[in-house]
Image (cartoon, rainbow, N blue to C red; front, side, top):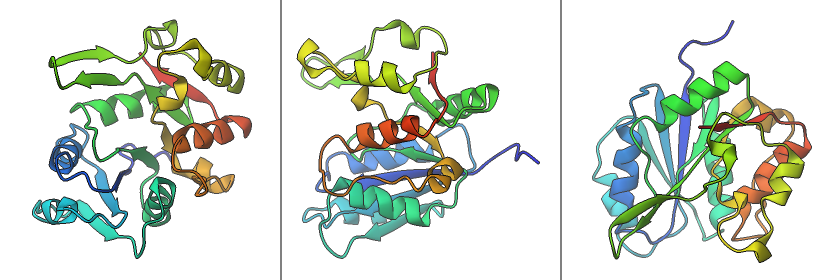
Length: 210
């Protein structure tokens, strides 16, 4: 039987982002979709990141401090290990969610019976206060499927601009567990790209949110 209101686990890896973490956590807490848990994994910050997070009193928020600095992949994997949700979302600690992001992602996931859903990102230019979509391709004009070939073609760095490796996949937890997929701990950049490529290589159905 399909759960009509599945729990979503939002994992927030953090490291020395005291100027952004409050905004990130509050944007997760303020989601219009309510069955959520928020798991912040701090990677041995030496600023006030943890203190600021602990000041936010909410039973949906769990804060874990890593015993040593292991990098963003290790922090993400710790979150995956303890997540209870049927769906996994990653929120970088210096980013934030629009209030209806989870609701929209889940709607597409259920409608398309997808294993992964990705959405366009908004680039926030702090200097001139402008916000622009990261991607202008047709992939995000309608709900489109991204297969492994499309994904790899969308990561040609020499073409300039943003690549599909910037996408933050919204993943079905059971798919990750079934295929034993986690983040590669031997890298500190591009971890989301490798995870999504591995999912697609295992046949994941990935859809875009228009």
